[in-house]
Amino acid sequence: MRAHIRFVVAATLVALIALTAPAPAQSSAGGREAGYWLADASGRVESRGAAEAYGGLSGTPTHPVVSVASRPGGGYWLVAADGGVFS
Image 1 (cartoon, rainbow, N blue to C red):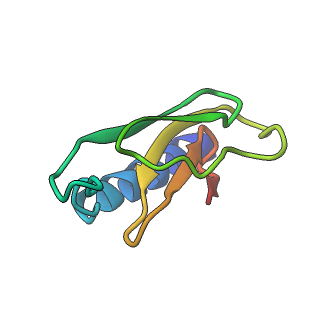
Image 2: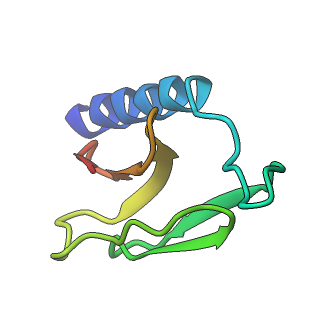
């Protein structure tokens, strides 16, 4: 039951973050370019397109990373299966 509650809290947090996500990154030419991040279960993050790379987790999480969400003002949060949030 606790795992279910943590999952619901983490999913709600990710949804709220997605609603307040910043606009797409600006290119050096001044136009808008799309970009995104890919996170694997160990917390390694790869950037694609115009998304900036900020690195991944320095250690191994206890539970797998299940989501990545952009932070207002830049960067991202990683959310683990147990509800843990890493920045």
